[in-house]
Figure 1 (spheres, rainbow, N blue to C red):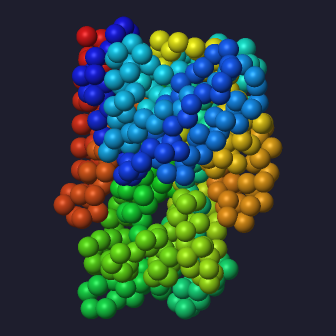
Figure 2: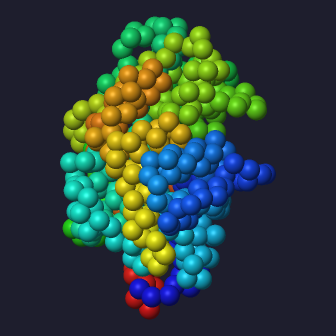
Figure 3: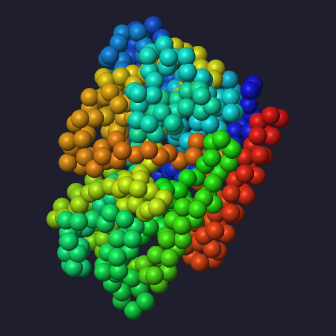
Amino acid sequence: MGGLGLGVLGLATGGCTITKGTPPISNVGLDKKPAPGRKTTITVYSVWGSTVGEGMVKLAQRFEESQPDIGVRVVYAPAGIGGGAVQQKLFTAIAGNNPPDVAQLVPSQGPQWAELGIMTDLTDRYREAGLGPDDFFPPVWDSITYKDRIWQVQWDADPNFPFFWNKDLFEESGLDPERPPQTIEEVDEYSAKILRKSGANVTKIGMIPWDTYGASNSLFTWGFAHGGTFYDPEKEEVTPDNEYVVKALEWIARYAKSVGGADRVTVTPPGLQIHPFGTGNIGMAPLVAPNYRDVKVNVPDMNIGAALLPFQAPGADRPGAGAWIGGWSMFIPKGARHPDEAWEFLRWVGATDEGTRAQWETVGFPPGYTKASVLEEIKNDPLMGPFYDVLTTARNIRPPIPVADFYFTQLDENVSKAVLGLVTPLEAMRTVKENVMAEWDRFRKAVKA
């Protein structure tokens, strides 16, 4: 597809559940000049602020140290409120035929951006480098491929989620502190024993299943844990009305009703700076690594257990069935000035032993490359060990479709309505399907126009 206007880019990227937070006041440490005396300089756009952005600069320096020919200029190009979906600086550069050599995206956005013609096909480069499915965790390989072509290098494989429990609260509630629930039915049993109220308000709760990092991520997690599927690739059809997805939402809504309603949960004090699990008032929670780290640092006396997510038969058949892999990728925008050198950077960061180690030591995200020796260190790390277990056993990703962000937004809106009792779970999911399929049809027509 030829020259794209910003209007089409904006049309295609509405809504996203990934947020990067408030942009930093200063860009100091987030930009980088290239090393002098290099044959070629590539420009890398980085969406990251804070310590992650500083780590990206250090990662570029490590790449420069690994070889003598390619310099790296890092340009801070923050995402908007929509997170990875809305990258105004990147879109402006692409529309002006002056794209960077390397840019970032959330893997699920790949199909959309590939259809819009703003990504370079990397299939031949993967083949020439001898890279294939066995070199990456299965969900990562599924994320980087679209229509049998490869479009991105996923350098961050985010394991969503390990399942943590508060052993102290378990013991206080008469539960075995060393035995987490294995099934959703056991989650309900444990939750009934943990629940405490003050009047109509909930002061201690077993779990908050509708708040697993947003409504859509909650349904993906517990939908997978019930054995649900969200997309039929053969029919090119979203399936939020899948039997087990609906059962998962029915369970979430029933759980909220059983405690008196989502608005009755008052387990966190005002101004809390860590994940609510750290209050000691929540028995069980899926957590991402930064939140787990914060709880461990700020509440060192809390005894925490870690396991794989509970599951629910007959749709699912094992603990951890609900886990899925998210993360971030890099790609080469169509029209990049130095695609060969850009590929060398991408391959080094995401698909070499040296580069994946450098990324872990500077940025700090688990790699998706199965041959990375640093995975053994992650496995044995007291903090990251539970996340390694998820990384190596997860089989799911969020649906890789051209209207993924719209799908996620629709789930956010309609899952919340079901949890609040405004609509039934089945009605909510039928609405999502109808709206997403209509948007997908609109997208197809817009791309062809």
